[in-house]
Amino acid sequence: MKIEQVKLQQLQVPLKAPFETSFRRMVDKDFILVSVHGGGEVGYAESVAMTIPVYNEETTETIWYMLETFLIPQLFASKITHPDNVSELFAPLRRNHMAKAALEMAVWDLYAKQQGMSLAHALGGQKKTIDVGVSIGIEPSVDHVLQNVERFLAEGYKKIKVKIKPGFDLEVIKAIRERFGADVPLMADANSAYSLSDLPLLKELDQYDLIMIEQPLAHDDIIDHAKLQRELKTPICLDESIHTIVDVEKAIELGSCKIINIKVGRVGGLTEAKKMHDLCQKHGIPVWCGGMLEMGVGRAHNIALTSLDNFTIPGDTSASDRYWLEEIVEPEVKLAAPGMLAVPTGLGIGYSVNEEKVKKFQVREASFHP
Ligand code: OSB
Ligand code: MG
Image 1 (cartoon, helix red, strand yellow):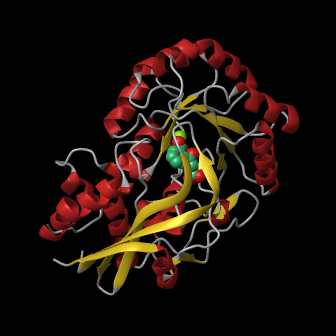
Image 2: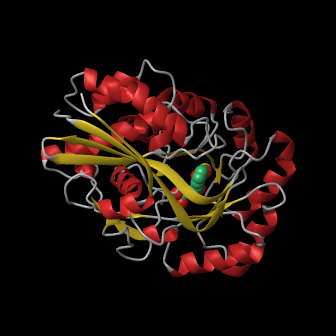
């Protein structure tokens, strides 16, 4: 593959409204827009780490450092014929999956564009549209959550995920069921806020017919999750605990979960994400695509990945207007029908990047050449 330049642009963009999880309240988004230039085409990707290491160990700063010091020089120093080569190339370097993914995903987009095809097609995705859900943060009151649920159900979203934490859990789920009924496709994401000593509470949550409960226990655990899964009828979905294909194998073997949330950044790129998808499919484990409050470029990558057939559960890739007043891509990501996004058929990610908008939010820039 022809690769002539890599550009990094750090952007800081205010969220429409704060987004709170059990570990952090976010008011703006800080990320690196990576572009890989070659043969007259440009491939794009977004980094997904937060500014402080509370979801995983990476931050925007560690990603910049890894890209500039190791990953971009290694990419320039080797001959890549296919994007799959990028994860092989980076494998000897430990972890830093979000840094690796940011560069690898941009190479995937460039590859698809150089081959004259969509990214979804390059990945082997068949779906023309995908079903999507929405993730709702912790709010100052249960009423605020109910208002959000109402709004997103009206927009047709096919899965409602609510964030929970100790003291803001049962009451929220109960209120949603009472107000919107038993048929609302509902799930809860705890972002590791509980331990096995919370079993009585988790058993109560088990009564509400949730599609799943996401990452109830520690971020690095698969043993206690297996114990918990044996006590619950609600499927457990792992997010934070899954970094590699080996993690997936072990979680399946132990019975730590029945569903897996695949986030491209967390697993080190699209090649690894696709491998996990395939392995889960073989074991009858459905997957869905999680999100990290991406802007349009990251959303486009998630849409392309979700076009693979074992993404049978609606993911967190909502429309751009879920978080953003202004987008950096054109057109912005919009629902094609209630709760559905179209898989673009244009080249690569299928959305173009508006450089003027990028400049508006840009706080740092660097360019690298072989
Ligand atoms: O656990 O899935 C999560 C956002 C930031 C960090 C972790 C998570 C999330 C979300 C938001 O749930 C998903 C999205 O809308 O992009
Ligand atoms: Mg999660």
